[in-house]
Image 1 (tube, rainbow, N blue to C red):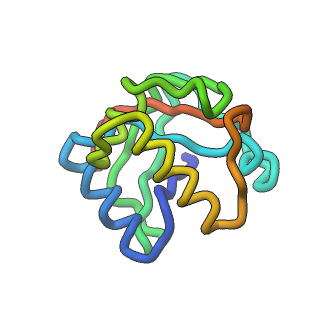
Image 2: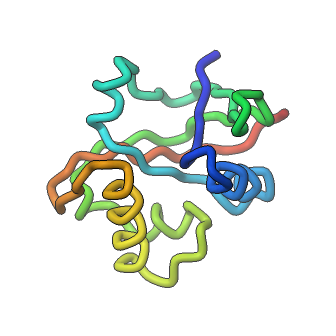
Length: 124
């Protein structure tokens, strides 16, 4: 079983994982270029992934219910809101995600390809 690590292991991952476990976070967005860098295939519908904590331990199992690759500017408010991170608008979500990826060394433009994943919690 492949795994998923949300955010970065500096408190952010713990916060994001808690949102998943509470049922508030049912989507996530990643950069398509990161899949190439990590030589990873995209997730597929029905795939189950181990959700990992900061120590690399599985804390839950999620099942992929949606996979879309699209330009950053085409991410919908429905998807962004389902990330469950409390953004009040799509503009706020975009600014937060651009800032996050910028801190990690990647500039995200409107046309930057992203992977929008939807999932559901299926167990621990």
